[in-house]
Image (cartoon, rainbow, N blue to C red; front, side, top):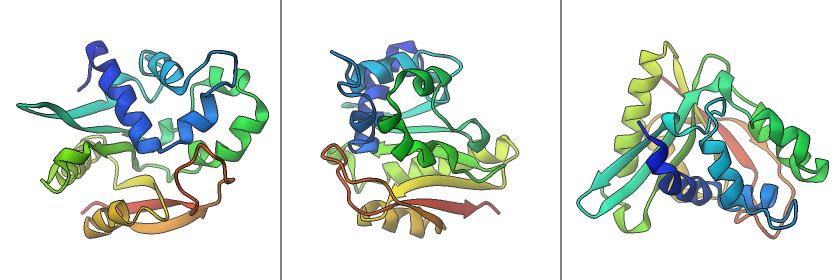
Length: 190
């Protein structure tokens, strides 16, 4: 479980996994605001699902190489203050990502592995750990959102039993790294 000292790593992995989503939401929404700054506030907010206590890290002798942020899907959303301070044109197109969920599932918000550590089983280790967390929370499935054109991630998720439940269209913006719809995926737990 993460702690306040993990804030910098946690923000780095949230940005990595979001692939432009947080930059779309926060960068320059107000003068001088960056996605990094906004996320640092969010991970320090104990009422936020992105709080560092919902973060788990894989560390090797070279340092932190992977991160999982996961929590009951019923907690999915942005902190209420975000809805009141972000301009409507920023939040509305992305709102489905923070509202579409499968009740009683355990939601994987972030699964990210440093490029140098990929192919070493770190992501599978984090998915297995998420399954344990889900079971201990009384959830019967794992869920997550993934970019529809992220073939590497989709291959991993499908190999672990995830299947597509819904496609969520997002507007094309310069900040978003993907053009395909976001997919809501589900993996039943045995």
